[in-house]
Image 1: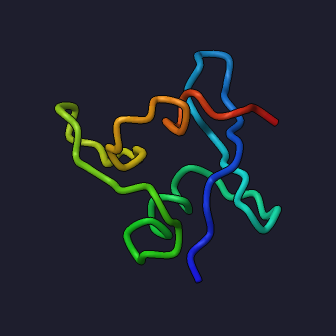
Image 2: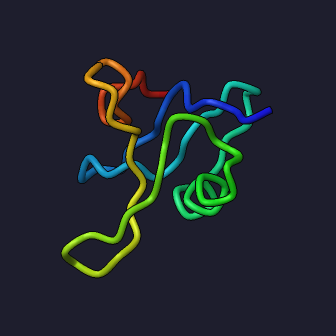
Length: 74
């Protein structure tokens, strides 16, 4: 069963650097990207941005409260 992102940790620039999963496990951003691509994290996906880099985002569902930037921090 896939885990969910329940909280995030941001750096001084406001970028997400770690994610806390529903199991309590903390993973870094790159690890979360791989897990999302493998279907191991529910409700998120990866996309290639205009900068050419791979990014992680919440699936669009019309609910802004579950966007990664709006999740609680830890």
